[in-house]
Length: 143
Image (tube, rainbow, N blue to C red):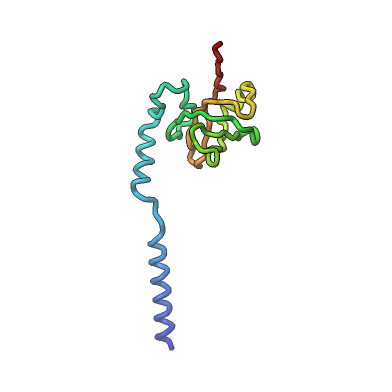
C-alpha cells in the first residue's frame, strides 16, 4: 500500500513539474519583433503623402495607416463608427477610438451620418484602433 501511495505521489509530482514547464511562452520572433519596433520608433510615418503630422504623440504606435470611409456615428466621447471604403458593407463598419488630440477638435468637424472622411490611425498595445487625424472630405461639383 505504501508503494502505491509513493508511486502516486511521484506521478503527481512529475505531472506538476512537466505541466509547469510546458507553459505557452511568448515565441522568440514576437519578442524580436517588439525589440525591432522599439528600435525603429519615430520612423513609422507613412511615405504616401498622407495627412501631415499623422504619427501623433503616441510613441508606442506600430504603424500609422490612412484610410477613407463613411462616418456612421459617435458612440460616446471616445469612440466613433466608420464604414471603411472599398470593403463590403457586411464587414466594413469598425469602431475607432479618438486620440486625446482629436477629441478636442472632433465637434468642429460637424460630421453627419454617411459623410465621407479621411483618417489616420494606428493599432495600440490593446489592439484598439486609435484615430490620430481625421478630415471631412469635400466634393466639388463642376457645372
